[in-house]
Amino acid sequence: MTKIEKLLISKQKVFTVDDLAILWNMPNRKKLWESIKYYLRSNRLQKIYSGVYVLADHEFDQLELAVNLFTPSYISFFTALAVHGVNFQHYSQVHAMALASKTIKTQGLSFVYHQLKDEIFFNETGVEQRVTYKIASIERAICDSLYLVPSMTFDVLDAINIDKLQQVAQVYNNKSLLKKVQQIIRSIERINDAQ
Image 1 (cartoon, rainbow, N blue to C red):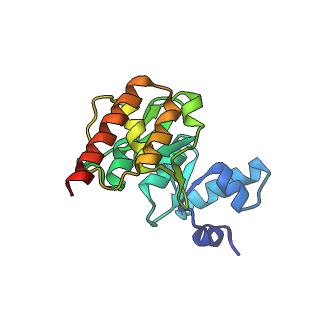
Image 2: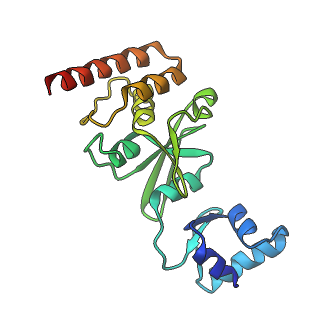
Image 3: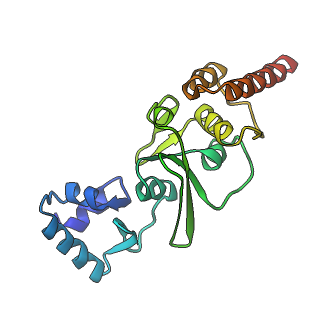
């Protein structure tokens, strides 16, 4: 099986240098770089960003790209809220949580990374593993958003699990966030009582 065939059958569509080393079983960095350069020259691979590649002329997921451009990170904030149908506002940027704030622009796309404290970021309560990336659950995305923007409002509260929201909110050890979460819970309970 050729190196490109190995990439074609992989569930991943975005590859870091380390991913290529593993998939191609090439621990020798010099030979690895020679292979990468060969496939770039022959237009089989496309460089997206420093150390990040995709198969040329193949579709890739922006969310998978986001978590590979700046690691470690997971999809959250406006992007996760839109994915889960909590907010309807469209943002052209992909938003993720990371250990540092950063904006990366590549391929006409913009990726915005928001910093979380280590103890919050590494507590994966409410972070879901998808096939090729991690994304905040509805409850984690709400808490991440309130942590960043305490005045944030949400369009749809139907799918929120109150118990999970309370559990995730504890991760932040932030009184104003806990207070805002309690307000959201009261709103959900009023909506449920009215039905």
